[in-house]
Every structure is written in C-alpha cells, then in structure tokens.
Image 1 (spheres, rainbow, N blue to C red):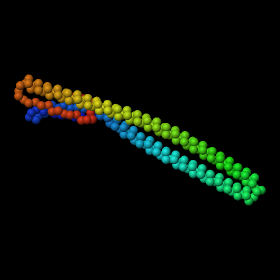
Image 2 (cartoon, rainbow, N blue to C red; image 1 turned 120 degrees about the vertical axis):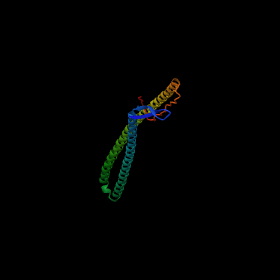
Image 3 (cartoon, one colour; image 1 turned 60 degrees about the horizontal axis):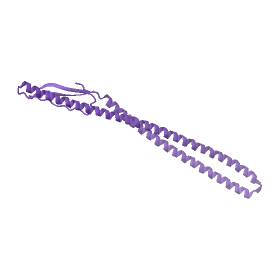
Image 4 (cartoon, rainbow, N blue to C red; image 1 turned 180 degrees about the vertical axis):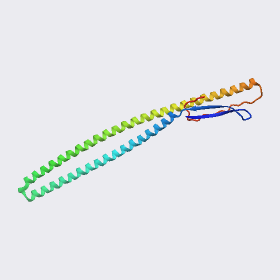
Length: 203
C-alpha cells in the first residue's frame, strides 16, 4: 500500500486538517514481476532454439563427412578390384564377390545414415514447431499483461481526475465558508497531486 497526505492550512500557516489518500499497488507489482519472468523465458527459448540449430548443423556436417569417407572407401575398393583383375584374371570372380559384398554393406550403411538424417530432420521440425508454439503462447501472455497494465494506468488517471475534482470542490466550499462567515479570514486549501502509481483511493 502507498499513502499520500497533504495539510489544509490557514493564512497564518497553522494546519487545520489533513487530506490523505491510500492506494493498493499489489497488482502493479505482480504485473511487473510477471512481465520480467516472461521476458526471461522468451530469451531462454531463443537461446535453446539457437543451440538446437547449431547442433543440427553440426550433425549434418558429420553425416556429410561420413558419406564422403564411405564414397572414398568405395572408390579405393573399385581401384583395388580393377588392379587385381588386370594382374590376376583367375581371381576376378572372387574379387567381384568381395566387391559386391562390400558394396552391399556400404549401401546398407548409406541407407542407415539416410534414415538417421530423416529422423534428425523430423526431430528438428518437431522441436522448431514446439518452440514456435511456446513462443506464440509467451507473446499472447505478454500482450495480455501489457493490456492489463494499460488498464491499470487508465484507472489511475481516472482516480487522479476524481481527486482533482474533489479538491476543486473543497476549494469552492472554503470560498463559500469565507463568504458566509464574513470574518475577513483568508482560508486556502493546499492541493495535493497523487503520484503516478496509484490504482485506488481511500478518504
């Protein structure tokens, strides 16, 4: 709670009364804390998404390197088979069987790597979709909190205007009292402007 008070003084400077106002700032502080927490979560989501993208790029690079290495091994095997065929015609069939066996293993490995790439791509798409959904939820919540803060500020302005009207009415009452009393005393009501953080008033 926050309170502001102002003294009502006579011409000689003595205080005759006090006008005070108290307002609740709980919702304002809660909204500010929620906004800070949402901004922190948003930054964390962005950091995790960047880390995931870097990890997937690294995985793609590793898969490409393995495919290049397998292609190089296949070329070496073909060269060896060609050399053996030229030097030993009698061992051609055996060398071809070995080549086919090695090629089958390489193809199986290549298919396995292709499946791994597809699985990684699908996982990336799911994670990106999930992060986008979380980001959208965070943005909706942030917009709602901002709208609530705007409403609280509008209520504050309304209370401030109401207090100003009350103070003007009090000045008019003092002037009326001076006219009725006819004592020649000069009474004055000191205005008090409430701070900008108010959300309710009590008198």
